Length: 103
Picture 1 (cartoon, one colour):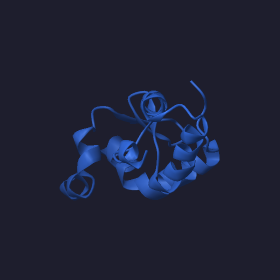
Picture 2 (spheres, one colour):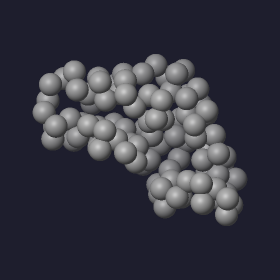
Picture 3 (cartoon, helix red, strand yellow):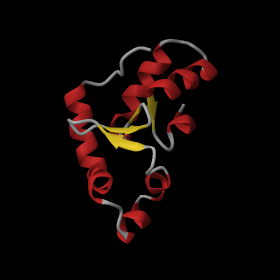
Picture 4 (cartoon, one colour):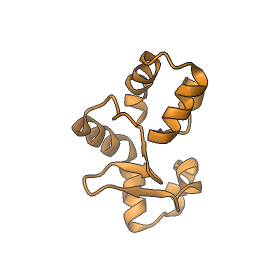
């Protein structure tokens, strides 16, 4: 599996900016407000975790913040694998609720 097309510091910064509340909920618990604001993530709460430096993961896949999805998708497209192989590769390395639709 190839590494993601984004730098780790950028991923950490964007994850904290976009998913700060989700990261907090993983550590401290989900309150009613967070359940309403992030229903997709709440429904997957038992599969979510964080790395020590603050990257959000779903099982063993990195959750890609919306601001970085374009560059990750462009990198996946650059391999010219075809849509199905590209989706398979993305499922191994990253996750986002809309990422398959964006392909």
